[in-house]
Length: 85
Image 1 (cartoon, rainbow, N blue to C red):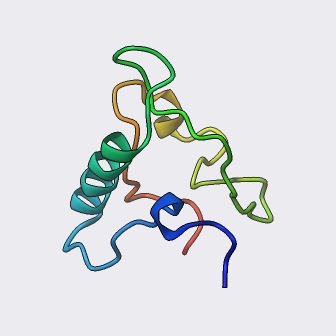
Image 2: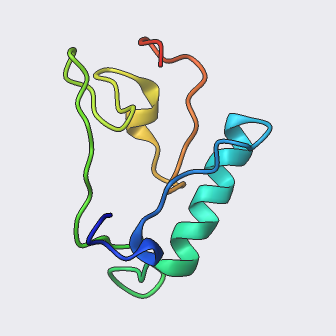
């Protein structure tokens, strides 16, 4: 068993019918449970555990990909990943 309380673990819903809906639902869940760093700001986690791909990508943030410039959404889906899941 994990020493982390289940209420503090945020996994995305794999049953969503599309990547867009999964990202939207995950963003709603995070905003509902994680306080922002400042009023109206981005939710602020104390700790994130992320893996790293052999090409150096983490959290599906691929070097040189257009999504690196995303500034409006806290969660974005990716359809043209340069690396298969």
